[in-house]
Image (cartoon, rainbow, N blue to C red; front, side):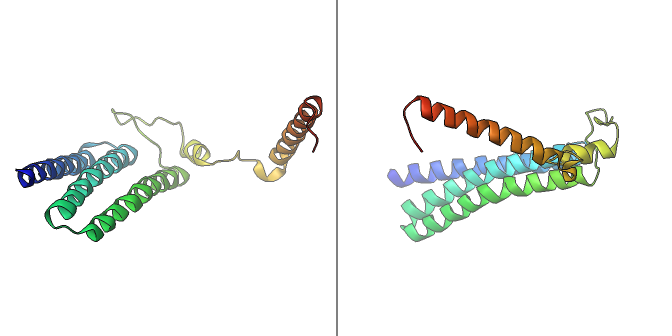
Length: 159
């Protein structure tokens, strides 16, 4: 009886994972631009990976009695859950940096120009090399340090 429950649960996880992966494949075909395709693929691949690996872990432990195989599948799941979203983020940011403009459902661009897309992808303003950003950061850091020093001396804590 226990074996039948293990098989049913593991196959339910496996089928759920396959539905996720199949949905992602349909999303890649049906979505209008790179960003929505990337979103559909990354979410469903991550969900599919979770369910398929859970099914494999259940099978390896309860059917085959191999804890080492379960550990290996768990490590594969762990690394996939970190590298998949990171790769999707890198692809999306690279597309923005290269000037690929996102579109809405009607195919109209959401941004006015490819330069705006490139600027959106930057983590710093365009004039970060002029030193204005570092001056603002230094002044905020000095303000924070002076507030911390004032709070420490008023509460009796010495540095």
